Length: 473
Image 1 (cartoon, rainbow, N blue to C red):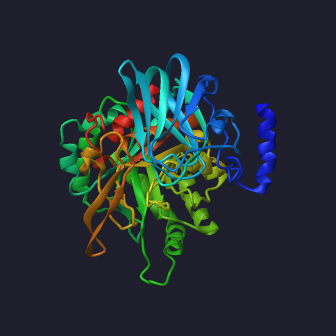
Image 2: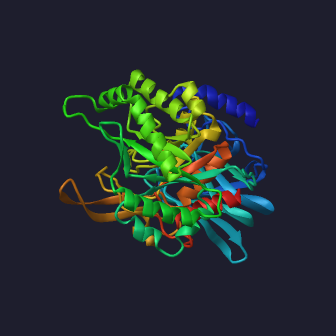
Image 3: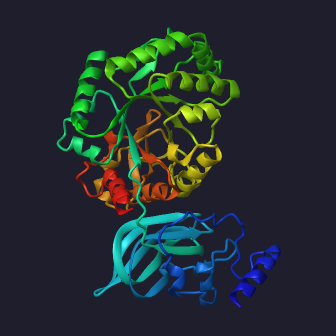
């Protein structure tokens, strides 16, 4: 009977949004593979409204959904019938109307909060510490309009990947010495496997390496960093920035950089190789923001292939512009996906779906093997209006595990004082994105940047979130 009803509802979608139909058939993407049994489909489900459509929550259809009413506090309750251990919840929303949702597990003292976040979007994998419970409740604590939920899955997932890596950028500037001198700095490397020095190394117009903080300070910082990672299996990288600008303001900067690279190729390669050997780097990370034309990528591909002859190569890349050749992709150790500073209609610069699952899917679509995809997670916030302001996550320790928004922050931008709300990736969101990357079979994740996080020992830090996601899986 249920199958027949599902078929009838599918046919009727041609006539509009009747009886809880999705208004776009791609709102419920194909499942990621899980190794543990899915528990919600065998459970007893009760809902606060639209009782007659609760079966759509576990029917695996991309065309059907259950909808809340208009009020805050609507809920879905899942009764497993006996105590079940769970650590993963998957939710699919066909709207983007959730402003806050909370997950509770039943205990002997009633329902206890185990998870909370601000949005679900098309696909959200929620990762939390394993809990044994007979019931969970998903409460739509704050909504802007009725919410359409297209599916729910519950797991106790135990997949592990001993080769999963965590790459992270460490900014070398005038403050880095004080940052690395803080107690517990070396503890970050309990989870970080690849550390990338950034912001100080670039090329001048003669093709020579330039170190903006000076060679003495650079060497001092590097020695401190090497002492911190001593005894650990950590790969040491350095970013070479392609930021040269033409003296002609009308010339395309990427054309200028392309010509510079082609005209000075041998000198550039010699400079980078000498630099790499002098300072003992295992690999070079390239950051050219951003080639857009095929001949520009031709020059970039050549750079990658030549560098791979003497060092590992990683690439800081976007999800909106990708022109690397198959040969270059094969030569690259991994791609650090800059899935941040990409504002959506809420002003969130690194949301859970477009900068999470969709970003990974785009990279796979570009032909990048999953083991070379490192999804980027920001350790800083951005104003919802897109202003050039990057406050550190560590500046707002009161965000706790679940907070990701600070309202009415006053800051300086573009020469004037501004006030706006700031979006962050919370501890919970960083954990979710890491768990998602593990579930996809990606090779790792990337963090930007170490200077902006709370100490590793802080239970609310981004590093701890990543650590728990890896340990929990």
